Image (cartoon, rainbow, N blue to C red):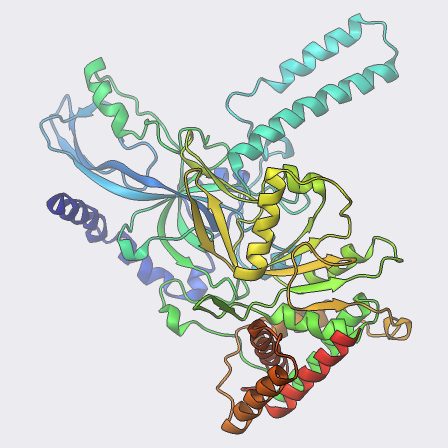
Length: 602
């Protein structure tokens, strides 16, 4: 076994010895040159760039089994007996034959291994982030007509034939034209629904893509650097540099027995990609890649081959500027929260939160927030809050919690053993994704088994920041960091320690802070910079004061749970970060206690 493993590793090192990755590593080390590589997202762009160097930014949705391919083989010209060596690396079809060539069976071919990843567009990405990548060149030769932007599935019938048959039936019938149009429309909608449903099953997106953004497609990515230390993980956001390739069977005059040997070498095998047409998920052969920091803006990432520990962070603005930005941001949030300043302070802490350590069953940095909305207002407030959050963070999504959605919704990813794939669910999200759980539309009803499992999964994220993927025979825990904002009228189904009752303040709602795109960019930079802020240990004086406060609280009320102390520390920490301070000070601790007093007295 050890000898086989060593042989495979040595064979895979052969690709590295060819110098392809090293050559591009040297070229792309220059960030300006790196950004000139086109960033593609759709089927049309991949079609227009076949064989060209491109970039793809995506989330790893599933990790397929490694694929073995013909790494080195020899071809012989029948007429001249000239020999030629070739490889199946960076190609979909392994055998590349010129006219008059045949496979040299006297040569002992070498089999290599490549890793396979199924990658989807980064889910929940908000529209304003598109401008962050507009400066990077897109594909310049996408000139396909509008009706060819999206290729159909291979097994779909010809739409023109369907239209002709429908038209003939219309001409032969005596149904009034108005009814004809309705019937045609119903038929088209049913047909499109079936196609759309099949397409979604194959694409396997955690969430349906917004049709108003762009026709984005998944990619099957093949990675040739197979060292165990470099394996990618599920839900990571990765930017690949490579070439899009299409499968083609070589023109050859081989005998049937030779074809039997050739076909398995050309990837025509029953693997996990067999049911995923290239017209839905193009094949990308990665030459290099970088794992992106999920807590950074898409453009604020390390150079492709730099040390992750030396990752560049955005410059910190002066303290006075931070304070001013904080005041304006709280006012902006307050205007969208019925003028409630206290709720605005807590929502700011929520937007800055991130899990920075998991130890001994404690999730440090987790700050789920439950806003209790007034019941006497219209139902537009949750959508208003959703738009507010979406205008400030990179990724967010609002989940409408109803009995039907819980009973019928696919929130938990699960393993499909028949297709040997992970079927995505809504909770398969990258870290630093804000999930707004809207319980205001919840009515009475009965939860069945699936509904209870989905509700339990939401609670697990709130309390433990983990999702248990369903592998049928056993669950697999996947750590996550999804910022949970719960909107409810009363007690939430997913309770947390921080519940804020919102009280309208009409005077504050009408404060005339005008926010344009430039100011929004300032708010986003503020949040992104401070989310990655590093705090130092507090002074001995402050530490002693905090300890005495804990002891005093426990003496007054012995039922005070231990979790409340961790919650206070997290809140004080986030408040200190929001002011751009390097440690929790006495002033910030007292400010936190005053906010808590107001919150509990509401």
